[in-house]
Length: 268
Image (cartoon, rainbow, N blue to C red; front, top):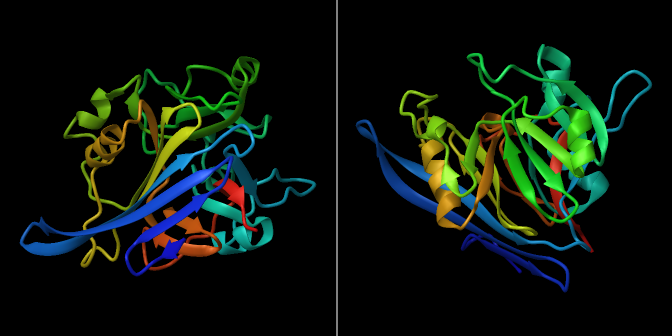
């Protein structure tokens, strides 16, 4: 079911259920009134329809996800039912010293991360590991090596941060009013219980029209929906949510080229 006019999309099968709602409200931002717009997806997956990544093709010299293309080209090729932006590791492979711990489909793409005991610039490269039993767990950037994640059974590891919710509680870092206190387009992904996930994409640009949100607002939305683990992913112009081949939410009016996406299901 697709009802973009009323901001609602649904898919149901024996192995996968997805419900997406778009919310829009007027909020005060300084002396201006702006729009806070966001889409929240409730995803009930299963071993038959698990989370999976799609990526641009590898070359003889570069790994999958290194090349950046418009996300609609990625979905046109792989035809996922649901897709959203992820940790945008491709840009870090190209330009950043620290890429983070990145694993896709059991293959190590990067094992270079930061020291969690030192002050870490944005992104802090905290991780979200996805396991074969449907669990998602969040960790500090250097809690485990890439090899250790594989030994633990992780099939995917996303690296961006910060951790929003850990063991059912919003992290103190996110609650700190001095920690990146900016209203921005945001993306986050969380787990209610194994196989039950919540994803959120918030629009925040053009800034004169859209309000964006703080990290603590993002965390509370996920906590209110029952998430016990959640990670902030790459927002800004990267923020994208796609359903049944159609872009239903973005962080900005344009689409940023990306090398990988988080997906569920296949278009029929």
